[in-house]
Length: 347
Image 1 (cartoon, rainbow, N blue to C red):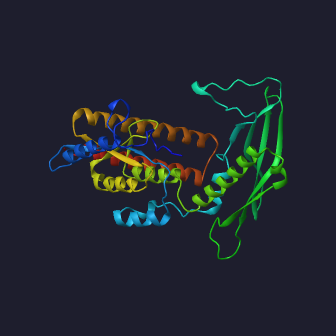
Image 2: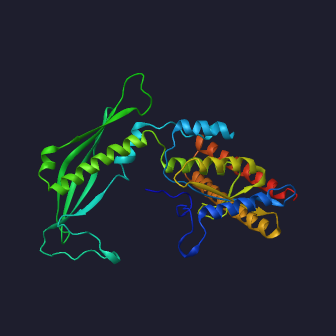
Image 3: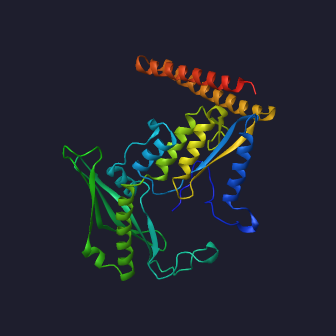
């Protein structure tokens, strides 16, 4: 499964795309040549537009530590170590597997995207395997794999409530790190044996996939964690969001070297992950675009702060709440000055 980065992008492939479009490798080569030309001595470079995509790969904490050291990146941005409890929550929580399949031997979808025609006698034709939370305490987190069967009119549901039990057993020993523990999967063989052979195979495949996913996530960072790392690092370079929704940033030329190191870091993450720097020449039209983005962000930040101050005043806030608002004001003023100074620098 691929996972997009902050902006949508197709996975880069070699060769040419349909219709004779150049491959992303060729496009990247073009960007590299353009970047080299504008970053040459005396080139009128204002900065870069930055776009990135991060996909699932096989990146460990040791990998990141080594790459940060080799590339001269700030280790303060390294994500915390992976915790087994987080891996369990990822595979069994809100985004857990949910598999729906037909019970009548027909394919649920046919060519053209239309659902296959089925009988309307009210019998069950579709089942869904899903995970349900059962309980959580200081020792264990318990979830069950359940089978939901829906009739043709979707008017009645039946459940096999315990095809398997998935337990995260916390490690409470003194030597264990935060979030340590292990996954225990216990199939209910009697319940599974009552299913058809095809369904039994499906249930066992789901349980094997859950085990595999847990083992993988205990070792390798998810694309979400890696994407958060890249976003935080880009934004630390006084980056401006050129699009209100994010995903496209402007980074001033003062950070060119760090941006190059960050691009190399993303390229090592695998899975077609990439960071693209689009050089922006120091021309009036380009400056106006960046200044407009800066002005919009400053206005939005001030409006948000003003709203929070008014809310705090009406509720009689004091002490830590007021101090936090004052810190936000100081940070906003400092950031505004930084951007103003950068954009006021001579060409």
